[in-house]
Image 1 (cartoon, rainbow, N blue to C red):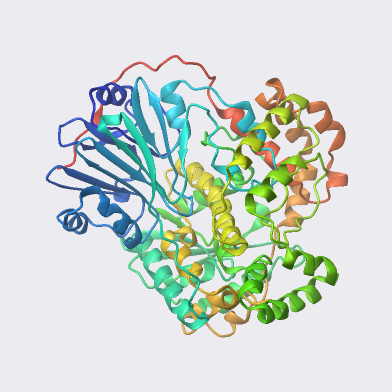
Image 2 (image 1 turned 90 degrees about the vertical axis):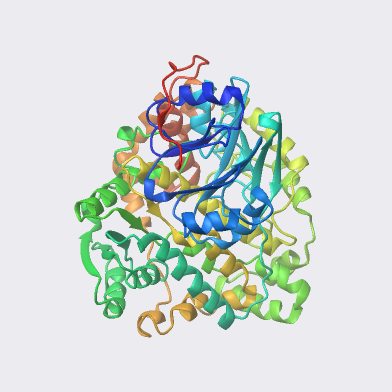
Length: 616
């Protein structure tokens, strides 16, 4: 069995594990064995992103970029508690990683609370097999795609827990922030919550100090090995702090800023140059955005497999361009600031929770945001006073879901944006979709005790889902695509700050400005906005519309009856869409995803020997 990119497979200590390991094939290396000698962990990926240790019958592996060392892990394992120590270990390490541990017939696997590192499992040949990629399990088991799961991914928003649904019914997902326990050699399976979310109690000053420390540790994980590290340097308040912190380490830093001649197209370069005096050792390269592939260009040539539909498909040609340019400059790691918007921007729904604790403070914030948005007073007050539970809200929005044309996102003080259906979803797919959503809504629980806590974690997981796909794509080019803002320690640092202190209606990303004061020039820290790519997106949509239509027409979405292609072709055009249509984006992503999956059947690959050696 071969798979695009990097992955790992963890096996319980049972006789069938040997049989499954032989089927994995030559593209994965045996990293670790159980104390019994049976295979425990097979992986494909950079050796520098794996740390393995053992003590007695206990084995533990950290997969991904982390601050873990073999000596440190062995010291942890020497304490009483066995694999239960992973709760504390998961909260102490910097970076983005999976933890895999075994003790006798007990196997434990956990990813990240942000959702960037996922865990899936399935029964294959009678063995409970665990992996970080759902498509790897589907390939081993010969599972077929779930058309209803495909239909769910056509929605423009995915309220919790819709995005956690795997694309194959036989594959089960572990919720982010929980660990999978496989016990009794695979005969018993359960999940346990390991992540402890910090209470939002810190002031901005205290939070800035904690955020700076978390970012320093996160960046150090990516630069401590030396070599050459590429940093995006957009001149924004996300990538620029990371570039500045990377310049402290032993690696050679190559920073790239892109610009064009669109209105505002030089802004990023201007701000990047204001920050550069604080980074004298950084090599700065400048490139033109017009030299990159356009948005939507080259979609027919994107053949890499991901384990879920992802916005990474729409940007894949541009990602390839950037990564290949970084490789040409000698880089072995690609550092980016994605995720800062998800953590550092305030949400209107924060005021809904603040109103219940400090009503006057909430009303002052609402008055400011209402003036800036020019919203009528009565609807705002109605939103503030609303007390509908998450389960009731989700059931209602599913019940009221209608086919609509894309409209501007209007996230106010509801739990999330309401569910809406694309107008080209087929009748049968719509019926199956709404039935599945009704099942999920019947037992749905929010991600936090109030709307603010729920919404901020939902936003992080939504963003990490995009980065996860981007990382899978970058791995096909053998490049770690690192987004430190989605590291759990960085997320926790931001979540620990009181909402009214983390962001202000009157200032752009004040928390990161406070965290970087003294490291970046004051002139740079006065930046109050960022540029978008809407003009480029509109051009790309106009120039490549016929290719997108052909892609959708020939994709399994149409041949399997998930979408009505005639309705799509008749109802959409670049002229009436303007810039971007989130429904169309989702449809193109799903079309490429489904096309790139191998034909689904239950025939198994030829058994091949296990390659590699066990950890010493």
